[in-house]
Length: 296
Image (cartoon, rainbow, N blue to C red; front, side, top):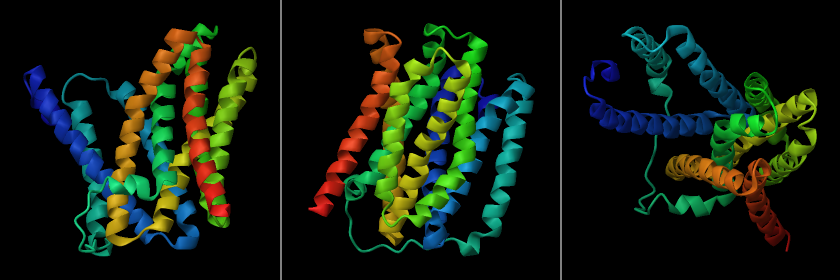
């Protein structure tokens, strides 16, 4: 609501900082709460439901904006009302919230990036691919000959796969003994998808089917990565690791658009797939090396 009443544009900058601080804390604590409360044998399913609802929220935001417009108090008032409604179940369950007990150590939470690198690298790659891929896919679609409307529909197919595949993939993650193998499979499918994109570009329906599966499997790197994090740590360590997890997601959001933009400037439309593939190849190499070291 403060954005509506801020008379000067410069006042929006500190408001944006405060908003993102609040959202970051919300993500860290909510994911810690969910990971802690979920039964170990159903953690993937629970986080799949969480990811699905989160994706629906991301999809509903632009739709709501299109319906309400940006003029006047109405859009700000509606968002304030939705946030207030969302706070009701949180307040109702306040006595069920997990307690964070300090382990007595005063170490930097950044060390948790390296403590469970399979999870933190997964969310970094997802952040890069999601943000960069979504932001620049319309440009890529235009350069390979799609109309603006058809490119937008393909982008919708990615989001649809994201929404519909998180629960099934989360359930599969509950049935594997080591989620790192599933994360490796997701990254491999992600890499394969970037390789096949140029070959499917001439057939819109094949491209749509590819992007539906690709979008859902790649998004599962977030869901399964979070489940893997929750299975490895607990208590104070898990809370700190969730902070590192969200940080890595933010780093990926910064790296993705830059890398993909540079790739398309240097190599044309094919640079889109090359840049995306680079992130997946990095992750495959990281996880593969850790799994080989475990076997040896």
